[in-house]
Length: 206
Picture (cartoon, rainbow, N blue to C red):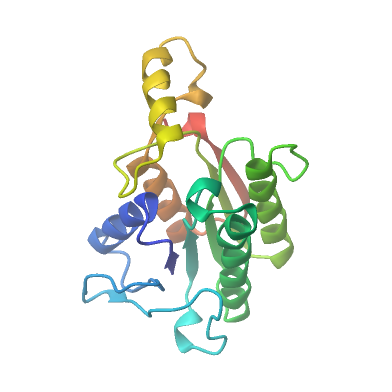
């Protein structure tokens, strides 16, 4: 299962999964319909009211790339619903239906004790996922994500320009991470489903 398929990283995961012969079925619940594909099952859903007993929750592994910004979401409350509540609702439902692997696109600095709201929410999601008890849990923590988004994010645009100029002197953990590499790490984690927890920091996929 892939949640977040309409986003930058999620779209890359979807393309890679559709092209991977080892992946025979992809369930991608979205708010708007995707282009059809023989391997793709695309239930259109309201993430506020997910159908708990839908048969398509029965999957081997889950990749979650759901995410927003406070600016785009419009408030901290809405941001928290998108980045915290929705991923955990999907995680609980898929685990109840037998999923064994979960791969999350999180963020550098994720920490439930952080004084920064964004980092704190990301850290809280990671901790809650551990409690759900997937036999295989992978958390990818990229820094700034490189790629062309469908929407303009002024803060990210400025940060990208500055980081591109400074990448020769900055530590690798602060380098821009191509979205395709994040997608590749998430997909490999879901397919491999190695037992235990694995955290992939940004510097490992730059």
